[in-house]
Structures are given as structure tokens and as C-alpha cells.
Amino acid sequence: ALVAVGHGSRDPRARATLLRLLDRVRALRPGLDVRLAHIELNAPLLDETLADLAAEGREAVLVPLLFAPGHHVTHDLPAAVAAVPGLRARVAAPLGAHPLLAEALAGRLAEAGWSPDGHPDAHDPRTTGVVLAAAGS
Image (cartoon, rainbow, N blue to C red; front, side, top):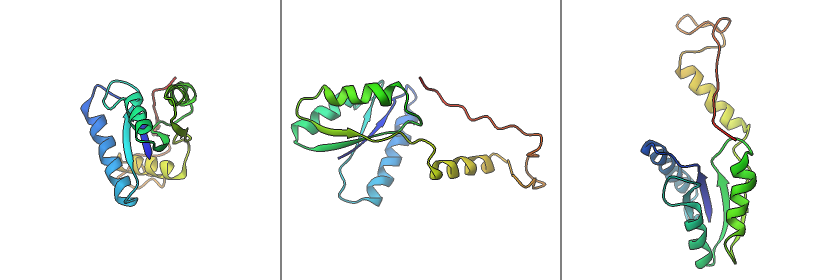
């Protein structure tokens, strides 16, 4: 099973976004058991999902929907796997600096009006700064 692991959020739009993402994954990989789990704040919580998989005798790959190898990726996810007796699972790398993620970020910049060639309808790239912000440990 592929277990997409989100952080969790008090904002219901975050969970809705992850559910839409997983619907796309299921469409691309019919027959793959794709499940959602959260580190905190939202159900299903990671420990519940992992316990279900162990009870079903399933093998799992946890895919952290996180950008960098912070505390959740390096400590919390491996600890959650180790806490479930009999679970066969491994933790994939975080999203990182994948080229597709860079393309998505460039697309968001363009949607916001930034253009590297100084298009007249865009912000001037010589005087416009770009701030990429993320939360993390």
C-alpha cells in the first residue's frame, strides 16, 4: 500500500487538497491501495493507518508529503513504523527538490504575474523579489 503522509492541519482545505491529490494518484495507478494518514490534527492518524495495514498483513511504503528531511521524516515516521509489531513498511524520501516540484513552483510564479523575460503585463524580474516560505523543523 502507498501511504501518503500529510502533516495535518486545522484548516479543512488542507485535508481536502490531499484527498484530491490521492484521487489523482489512484486514477494514474488503478489497483494500487492508496491511503492517507496524518502525523497530527486530522484523521486518519498515522498510527491508526499503520495498525490497520499490519492487521491486514499488508506491506506499506510511507510517502511523506513534506518538502525536506526534517524531524517528522527522520524521526517520527520511522518511529511510527517501528511501533507497530509485524508491520512491513519503509519510508520514502520527502518531496525534496524534484524537477516536477520546481516546474510547479515556476507555474505558480507565472500565475502570480512574474515573468523571467520581462513581459509587459508581468512584474519586472529585475526589481521583483520572490519569497518561497515553508514551515519546518
